[in-house]
Image (cartoon, rainbow over all chains, first blue to last red; front, top):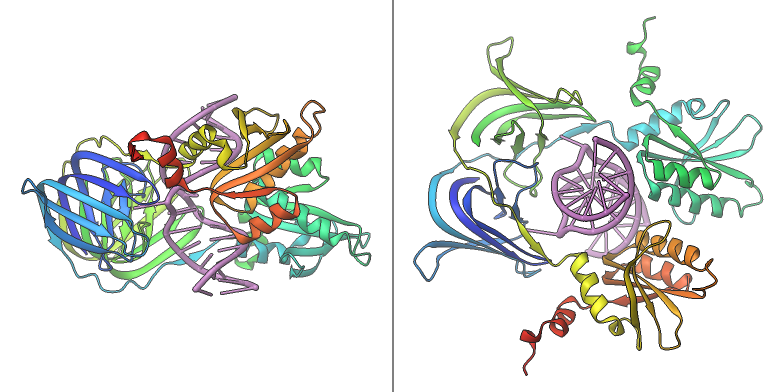
Amino acid sequence: MRLVVATCQVDYAGRLTAHLPMATRVLMIKADGSVLVHSDGGSYKPLNWMSPPCTLREGTADDGRPEWTVTNPKTDDTLRILFDEIHHESTHDLGVDPGLQKDGVEKHLQELLADHPATLAPGLTLVRREYPTAIGPVDLMCRDETGASVAVEIKRRGEIDGVEQLTRYLELLNRDPLLAPVRGIFAAQEIKPQARVLATDRGIACAVVDYDALRGLDDPSHRLF
Amino acid sequence: MRLVVATCQVDYAGRLTAHLPMATRVLMIKADGSVLVHSDGGSYKPLNWMSPPCTLREGTADDGRPEWTVTNPKTDDTLRILFDEIHHESTHDLGVDPGLQKDGVEKHLQELLADHPATLAPGLTLVRREYPTAIGPVDLMCRDETGASVAVEIKRRGEIDGVEQLTRYLELLNRDPLLAPVRGIFAAQEIKPQARVLATDRGIACAVVDYDALRGLDDPSHRLF
DNA sequence: TTTTATATTTCGAGA
DNA sequence: TCTCGAAGTATAAAA
């Protein structure tokens, strides 16, 4: 890992064309040759960058200033960095990173709801998770208290795409005389207004899921007794 | 902008819970208090981070090791960094960045196709760009040589969502007796096989757009005479 | 390997 | 301010 603080101008040509005027920035050059150009603000996204695989060539512009050219031979993307002044430079051996361990995404939400389907609708019981169909698996297939089939689509954030997806499943499932009629529940930690409108219009119920409360139900250590 | 190279362990709690075991990494602390944790590989995305607005508090763990706590008071997100050893540290004044200038995304593609609708289908002429409907604007509304209406949806990458979107527009537009029948063209620089199958199944034509060729048509300086 | 779905997405435009 | 769509999206899982 090499860190460079420099006054530089950056030009990118690839899927799009982009230009950064001369200014002071931080350059991060990773072991795989990738380059990140960061300013002192914004989010985690660099102003400009080059993804691996790529190669960095250090050269000199016509006027004698240092110039780096980073290219991806496959996609023909090019990042050109022209230097006015280098303020700081250092190189560090980081070694291989053991990587990030995550918890709390959609898969976990699905597990929790599979264990507690009744939180979605009274009397709901699980038939199976990842119920297979020709166009992909339905997150949860359940039965309600009357024995009728209920397909559940789970998202962390409920948007219009999820409703479309569930609609396709329901259309297919309702062609099966052994299952029909199948109704749908769209479950998410948060449901966008447009998605709710579309779902309601199609007769699909919406369920907002409280992740922390579910986890509390699931984990006995969270209970008082 | 502050740069720190250190052997550290990182824990995040917020929308999800994530953990990074002790290892050597680069920390970037921006002027707005945001923190990025980078390893020597991967893409431009940090292993872990904290987005602004947030505040960094430098403290000491029970065992005397330095420990930073970065918190977002609004969302209650917390990033905790525990240090074993700091290998390098430097601070730099970057000033405000003038920002990135872009060119070549969907908007430009829409402008080019609006100028040259006949490249999508023979005899096609533009009625208007961003044709308004109750569920959003249609990218291009055109007429073919027979005077029939044609709705065009433009994407850089043609995927299934775009076909769904155009389908909704067509369904709505075809309810208008003054317009109907309206057919659809799905235009993109690249169309995914699944999207093409779905479009074809619904009677929607697919058009793969050559961005460079279009730009050549549009810009006289690209012509030989 | 290619496709599909998610993301602590981030970012920008419009209402 | 909020909502919605696009991204040089990145990333991981599934086919």
